[in-house]
Length: 267
Ligand SMILES: [Zn+2]
Image 1: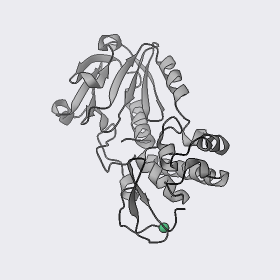
Image 2: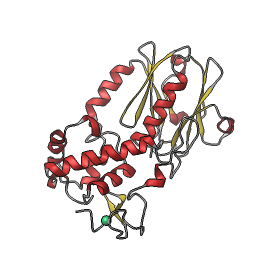
Image 3: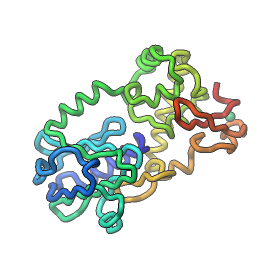
């Protein structure tokens, strides 16, 4: 699933390409992936592209806008003949200059949703969501973690606790911080929470610098792969040596999700 670095990569590219563009035509090939009335956005001019956690927001110059979530296998891709006829292309948005933006999704869990008052929807969403790792203090994060006995890995993947972190960066952040993903969230001391928050910021920044991870279906707005998968610290590296101590990494399951740990350096 695209996480903060992947979604932010797409946001930056959308900002570069479609600001000031006007929506001309919306074709919906799969009703599940488009929520709302497409007629409402025809003729709307794009004023801003925002993001909170894994959500993308396309603000029009009116109060209207789009909320986009890529979920498991979604892609947002600009003008590319392949997507014109691709099996998994779900929505095609044609801009007034003739360029096309494709929403492509194998599993069909993601969506493009029309909002009449985008700012209000964002505020409502933010009330339910946690902050991103760089926007929360160690003490505030500690306070939140103290309230739950769930494993720390499960807690940091919960978007109401912390926004933007998913399985890849959650795994790598815990490895970098030297914290066992099975520890109960409320057992972490302030120094450990600080280390974890800093480690999460570090892996998210590295992911962003590398254009995200494309070990799976993720592609950016130009249809290109990111390269963070070449630098996974622990994620998916079953049996490979730990970068710190060379112990073989082991796959375990925490909160129903695959997790990779070094039994020597994660306590
Ligand atoms: Zn190790």
